[in-house]
Length: 66
Image 1 (cartoon, one colour):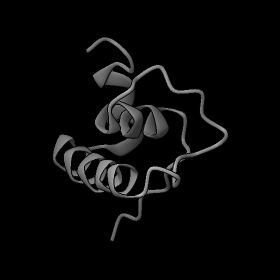
Image 2 (cartoon, rainbow, N blue to C red; image 1 turned 60 degrees about the horizontal axis):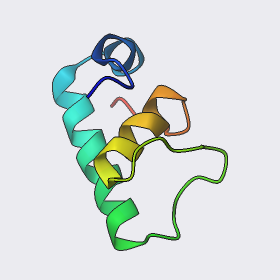
Image 3 (tube, helix red, strand yellow; image 1 turned 135 degrees about the vertical axis):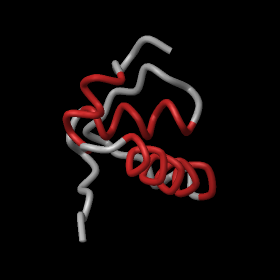
């Protein structure tokens, strides 16, 4: 996988463990509710995990750090 780069994603999230959790949760939302995709995002990927990564890279997903 080349897009988005892991370095760009880690700069946005901060931790690879948090990144995995956020991507997994968002990918499940996309997979279960296909209509629940961002209209602002033009996806390059077809799969839910790739789409979740693209949304994080474009700052369309807000991550709460408690």
